[in-house]
Image (cartoon, rainbow, N blue to C red; front, side, top):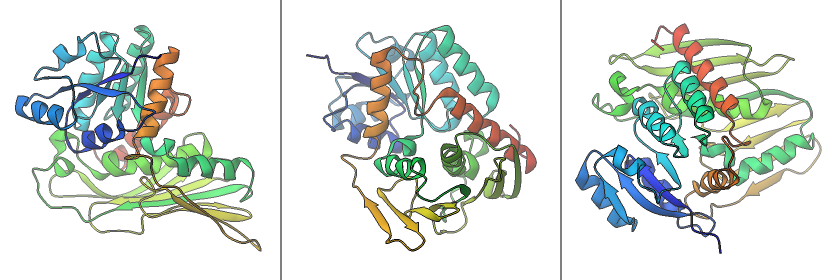
Length: 325
């Protein structure tokens, strides 16, 4: 019988709860350890999800020989340091998106993964959802003809707490790193490559972070992308893929849904609707476990090259609106 895969979590914040809930899925491993600089938070999280141990020191948890992989769920600006420590210790990493806050940091982590022959994957969980496996089947079967345009929105009116991570430049706040990474990554997923040129209109708020981005992407070969992301208002948060014969519309909250519709001229609409087995994070967890058990350094579903292309696009867009890399 295969030994259960044992996970450690660095940063038991809001999104880590969803990861821990996904481990209830029968195809996933178990939560073994939790680490936080706040011992009470680590203890509380460990008790809630029946983790065997908790730590108030990241390095101690990284050194735990029982752990098979580590999920990093800290704010963006802490990803690089935590992932670097894990890779240098030979501990496989599944790190929340964006993997890092700039291209240089991402390149360094990829180098470390190769140097230490250790798995590294950005937790862009949306790509692994069942709805996108169905969308891929529609695309591969040429159901909508030649793809010409991908459009998406990700927008909400957020709480204006200037100390919150989203609005705090010291915590790598801003809408592009927090929300726009989904728009960019899923556009890349459709075309299988990054944009050759970008245009952007953006708004920088009072705290110095980007609060709205309206972006045009040219992927070459007559294929384009458009998206908006913002902290100012709730938008129609669909993702739509337009082709020469029809379109595919992924439902509201395109990054977190089980519903999509195929619309082709002179044919009945085809709807797909599949609820998650657990929290929705279980699909990326199973993929990470599969790759780690196989001894791979990256996932073929979310390879290093994809992560690198996305952060390169983020750097370009941030530069165009006057933000530092």
